[in-house]
Image 1 (cartoon, helix red, strand yellow):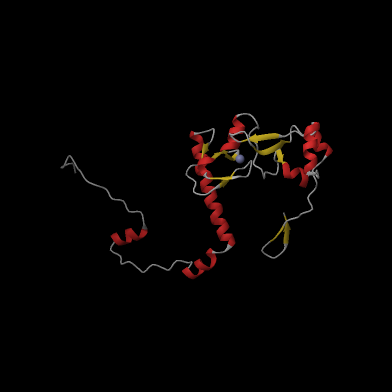
Image 2 (cartoon, helix red, strand yellow):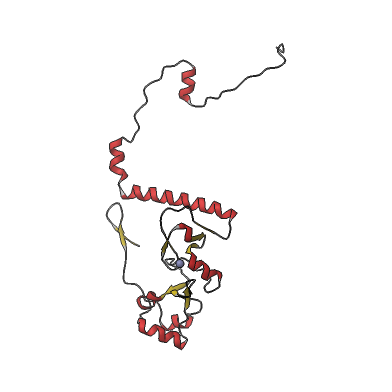
Length: 210
Ligand SMILES: [Zn+2]
């Protein structure tokens, strides 16, 4: 029928089953209790694996947000919205987010960032990366068996090449050694094979070597 010619009104949508049942005049039935009751929730919320899953989820969320921001700021950015102190992935010092630069290479403190920008060091991989392209002073003793007193001598002799990172005032705060320019040293003092083995227990109590 076209009697009206013009019709005005509003549409309201329902997509939940219980709303539709309500529309059809059905009485609401008491809701079943949630499967995990409060007692169980309390018991398991302190479980390490639950905590770990929660932390991993939170971390993945933060990482995704940063990656989205990187689309607009491809060079990286200071993490000014962080509440906690973070660790620099190069020198290992702790700073608040406003002094911490982030991009896909890792988290860099403002001093390490300045040293990268000034060309003192290339943009290094994070310090605990297994395939790291650099090493630091303590590793020369623990991984290559060279006593700290010999390090300076090796640098003087030109076998070991170091790069000193300086603060704004010119003080050296950290020294790194690039794998690429220390090939001769690494040949003479190869990396020790670690005797320390780490194991974890699986759910049946069997140990798994890491
Ligand atoms: Zn740093």
